[in-house]
Length: 60
Image 1 (cartoon, rainbow, N blue to C red):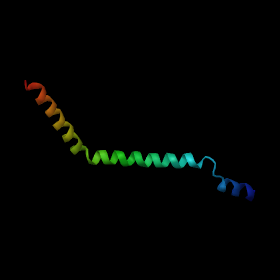
Image 2: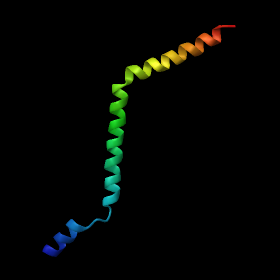
Image 3: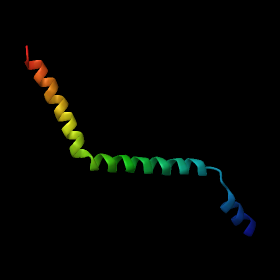
Image 4: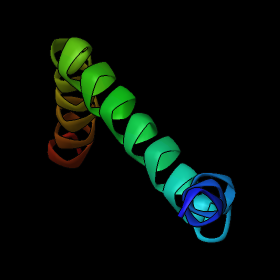
C-alpha cells in the first residue's frame, strides 16, 4: 500500500499540461487586469484615431 502511495505522489505524467494551463490562466488574468486598468487610455487613443480619420474624410 505504501508503494502505491509513493508511486502516486512521484508520478509526473500529465503534470506538464497542468502547469501549462496554470501559466496560461495567469497570463490571461494579467492581460485582463491590464486592460481594465488602462481602459480609459485605450478608449481615448481609439477616439482620437477615429476623430482624425473622420476629419480627413470630411475635408475636401
